[in-house]
Length: 370
Image 1 (cartoon, rainbow, N blue to C red):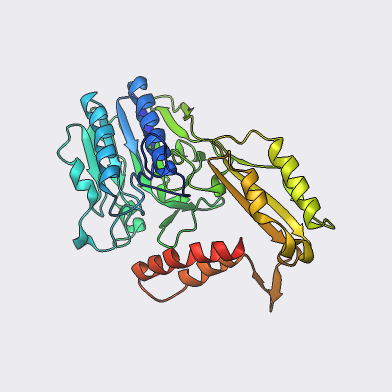
Image 2 (cartoon, rainbow, N blue to C red):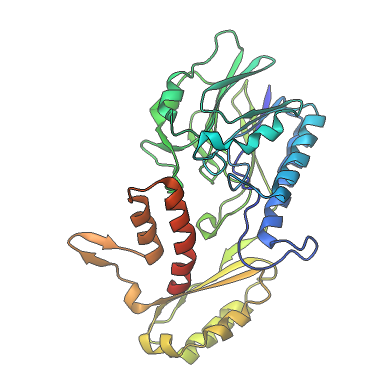
């Protein structure tokens, strides 16, 4: 029996200011639609017996109509192909209040599409396979829901799927304040496969236990990560990762500006950028250890103009004084944005308020750091 596992498509995600020339929408939003379509193309070509999408199909609880329409059209393709598909909601697409209702209800009328968003362990039988599906949940906790998940003795194959970070000897988290984590011991058992969502990198967590990763890169924190889908042979346990052809994201060679005047920094930046192929890519240039005087007089707009061929060009300047972390009474103080996230996460307010504070504060602090 063949299974395809994918996750974290984040449809509706947008970033940067460039528009797609053919769609006239945010370029990254269009990229995420294209990568998901490619994932569905690959899935249909593999002709699996079942598909599992392990959470965060959408980037938000209330996706815009364009994202909903696109998701429906792609899932209808799976439905028309007669491929049994299980979708679970993740932390990005689960409302804080149950009374709000879930966008996943729009999929319930589609043949062969099994939408799981209520906080429980739901069992879906697909021939000889039983899928035990646990969506993102705070109350009851994932630990409580996992305690009721056991392989079915009357099914030849049993697969567990959930959307969570995993903690143990290795830690797989996204450091989001609303993420849920479970111990690796909680998912141990006689499962034929465990399909995980939430962590954005393709990773083997344990025997027959994998994160498929996201279908596109949400930021430079995912630089270098391949994105794709997993093909699983449930009988043998063999796993094959099928990469997706997504927009390139690159770091240019870092410039060490120690002892350099602003004109010398500009010249090195010109050399680094002109020697790289940056057309239509997402590009970052880090200039570290910039002298205080050079930092004040540096022609930053001129450097940014050098990167106009890129789909997005990000310039990160690191003055000398920010290189060393300040230590106060044994506590390390890091980058402003990181410290802000830690501060907000520790506040004794609702998740909705934390989300609003993060949304308003992070863009402002990012501009200040730049």
